[in-house]
Length: 392
Image 1 (cartoon, rainbow, N blue to C red):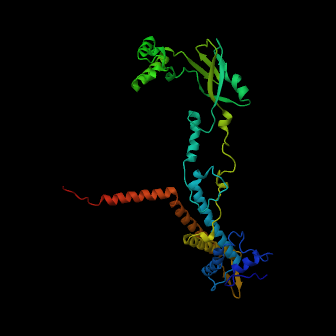
Image 2: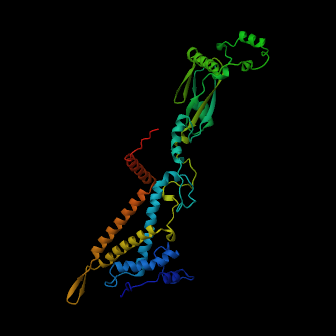
Image 3: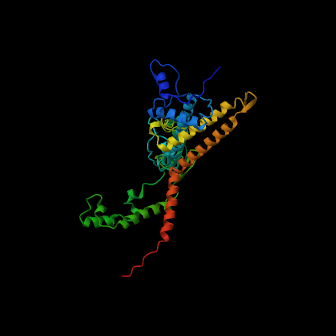
């Protein structure tokens, strides 16, 4: 079988028109057809194929490939370039993108960073500290009975209000009325004497009369502090003990009292699916698309040309490695397939390393480190500039 090899030229436009017209005939120019309808890609395809063939020795040496081989390498190079761009964008902005909608294409868009994910992570601590969070605190209450000290909160509340769930009590309101609400507590001396004084000013019939007194603010603070210290020292026996939702009240209630408490359900806290479906979670659903070839800069296209040549060099080596030697009249010709494979791999590795280093330097971290180095160098340089002495 006589398989045709590189004839010296190609026509991507003719092959593309033959395949994409209706009804289609012939074969698609590239394996996936990602960029076949991109006019810039189509215009460069033949030039890149000719350049690669010439770099491989044509026309001095035969190139055992066809146009579709060069087109496949060209398509792979563009896709590979876009892959690394998208990977580094994902690495740089993943924390800001998680939780965003998957419906928007992120390619060729400037991503605005924010503290959203940082705050979300901190909410877990806020839930436990009672300062916010992503778990709803609920409120419950039980009725304390006279002469009954122990109460089972699971039995009295959880089984009825949260069936099948486990509650975790966060706060119990076994406290006195706040001091500010007891401003007229007898402890501070707002008694008959004060009332007689207010009556003498004509304010006794008005409520609250004390609000008409011109008193400094620190006097109110001192009174509130006195009430709280009185409660803390003289009424310190009022407390509770909570173990595994088994509550003990001290002292034993002497009357029927409503006791309120805050709680969460452990199922709510343990639920990892607190965000809605259809949002960015990881690399698998990050909506970056393949690059648009016609929008690529010259920097990107030059890298793609070189990578295409590296792929074509390796492919040419694979083809020639099928036969290490070819018999000719009176001798054998040794083919350089192994050398071409090695050269193609080395060129690919060098280009990928170069691209990674460039992308790493252009991440937010890399740019900030560069700015820091520039600022340090500038400060050092300016420190050597002599300062003028001004005499008035």
